[in-house]
Image (cartoon, rainbow, N blue to C red):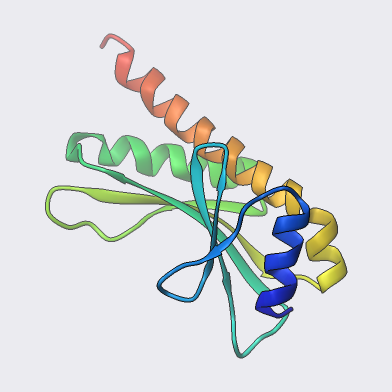
Length: 134
């Protein structure tokens, strides 16, 4: 898959894709910013990603647990904790794998919905656990 094909597929699905400063394709799904990262060396590999910075280090263990549970539940989508710097960490959600252009196009909406559902479930789980009295 080339960048133009993916850009066009996103536009056809009603998204408004742009090429970001890293050369990746970025777009909004609702209010969530997503990036589509293509591998120059493997034309069938893609990575669809959204990331959030969390500045409450007290929630780190809670996010690790919620990310692990969501990754197990969603199977083809993964959630993981990114680099920890300056009293904050990043939670990253991704769908990545090999797909032909036809499979990519036919499953694009599903990939996006998986990421949005997954990130919502992780944040909801963290909010629920954070509000539980001990």
